[in-house]
Structures are given as C-alpha cells and as structure tokens.
Length: 137
Image (cartoon, rainbow, N blue to C red; front, side, top):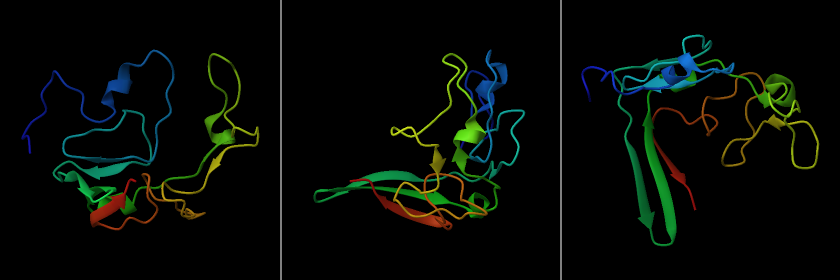
C-alpha cells in the first residue's frame, strides 16, 4: 500500500472539488488513500484498508472477488430516485425509466431487493465484510 498520496493523482472523488458544474455526491465508501468530495455527506471509509480485487474464470463463468471491511455497512444511503436526482442541466428533463415511469433504484446488481430504510452502499445489498465473490456472467 502506498504510504503517501502522489500529488499528481486524484484518489477517490476529490477531483470533483474543482468541477465547473454543480455535483451532488453521497453515500460512498473510501479505502486505500481515496478521499471524498469536499462537500460529500454520509460517507465513510478506512484509508488504511486496501481492498483486494480479482477477476477469475471458472469454466464458462467469470467471477469478481473483492474484500470489504466493516465500514461498508455503516454509511448512510438512500434510494436513487427521480425526485432525488432532479433535472439534468442541459435538457432540463427529469431522470426516468425507459417506459417513462419515475426512477427508483430499489434492487441491487443481482436483482435483490434493497432495504427500504438503510440500503447498502455499492452495487450489492448486504455484502457483509471480508471476501465477496460475485458471478459477473
């Protein structure tokens, strides 16, 4: 693990600190020197934890294995919805599903229902801590 940040690189979302257009960022987990956007609320992490990421093939299947620590489960998040996102700057239109209905991301990458009161940060609902093995295809 690097012991200090290289000033030539951005780690995490601090690159958005100089964004020209307004950004809204919330509910992220940061590891291994990554830092949040300066105005981010409801984020957490562990700068000393270095997650392991590995892609493996087992026959016809591809798996992603990654590690998490307990911080992934304590970050406060909410559903991403049409109301939360508001309108896009250029077209001045709201975000919606392809059929025109309001957007509500209440299922994870695997199709599992997310918690109504405390959805997990990231693509997987309740991933736990330690190694997570995910079948990609």
